Structure formats: C-alpha cells, structure tokens
Length: 254
Image (cartoon, rainbow, N blue to C red; front, side, top):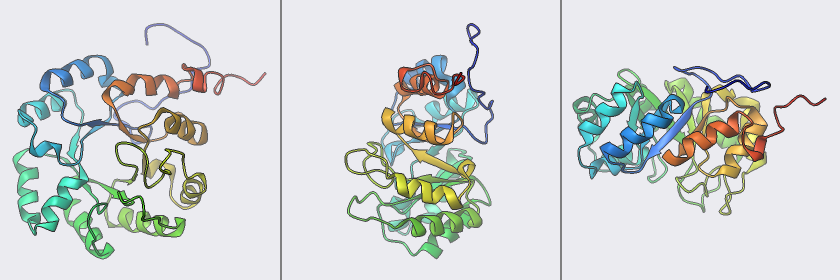
C-alpha cells in the first residue's frame, strides 16, 4: 500500500484460497488487459472469459499469455462448455483446453438441460487435468430453485471434484441469487451458508450494492465474481472499508 492506515481489515495474500476476486473479461483487447493488470493485477485472482467470447476474440493466445505472465489463471465461461456439450463435442472441448494450455475450466448447466449426475461426471473427468469451477443456478429467471436444492447441488459438485462452486447471477446480477431488481435473495444465501463453507463459494456479484451486502455478511475475504475490470480496485476499497458503503463497518465500535 502507498501509506499506512490503522484499523484496516486483514486481507488474504495471493495466491489466495479465500477472498478471491474473479474478474470477467467480456472481450478486452491485449492492450486493455495490459492496462488493467498494470493497476489492478494485484487484486485479480482469476479471470473468466465471459460466456463464449473466446470463440470470437482476436489474438486469444496472445491475451492468454499476458494473463499467464502476470500469474493470473484464466478460464473459458461455462456457456462455452455447454455449447460443446450440447453439440456432442466434449472431446473437442478437451482438445481446446489442451491447445490453449488452460489450467482451469468451468462446468455449468445454466443454458441447457442436463442430468445432474452427468454434470458431476464432467466435473470428475475434468478435475483429473484442470482445476474445476462449477456453476450452480439457471440463467432463466423463471426457474427458481428452493434453497435445499442449491445446497444439494453444491455439495454434490464439490464432492465430484470442483475446487469452488459459483452462485449464478449472470453478468448483470439479476437472476439466480438475485431478484430481477438486483436485490439479494437473503434467505437463500443464508440457508446455503448454513451447509456450505463460505470459502468454497464464489458469489457472482457484479453490482456494487451486491458486493457491499456480501462483504457485510461474510467479511472482507468473501469470494466475489463477475467483477468488471474497472470495478476491481473499487471493490478492493469496499473490502477494506475505504469507500462510503463500508466506511465505518470495520472501525472500532468505541
């Protein structure tokens, strides 16, 4: 840090297992990635190339190398995995992971119907060669799962070999964990936390109010995802109580 302040909450240090910030890259250029990493690289733990943007992104290999040189793992969005699976091209997906030397992968079923045991089998198979993040929740706002189902799915996917489970919210933060207004489904989150360790969950929380809510509930070292590149540093200040939303939250009460 550039100077000393008292009563700043302790943050975990990279490489982190908890307190992760997952940034979403929705098609940035190589130069844009370099600029973001120059200022925010210390606060980015993992990067998702949103949905299937990697299919159409120019200079993909060069961009991946920039992230790799910074020590930041990257993975293709779960929608790309689903796009291969729905076309019966899972083996081709494995070859893509090999081609680009990917060390992380996301398994999701937010856009397709898939028996859960089949999803867990994909997790088991992929976890033999890469670190797997599995996403729970549908991208269809009309599909509302009860809390017990979220818990059962998360537990099964962790047991199948997922490193972390991701709570679905889409890039807008208006489905899954959240109502269409962006409001957190508080009861759902608290029920999940009764059964699943917070360290094992990445909560997709692209909106500032959502980030603030999770930090106040769990603390500065909550895992948060789908963070826009320009919001990485603002999020870090929220984690540290250096923005109005959490300004007095970590200060001594007396």
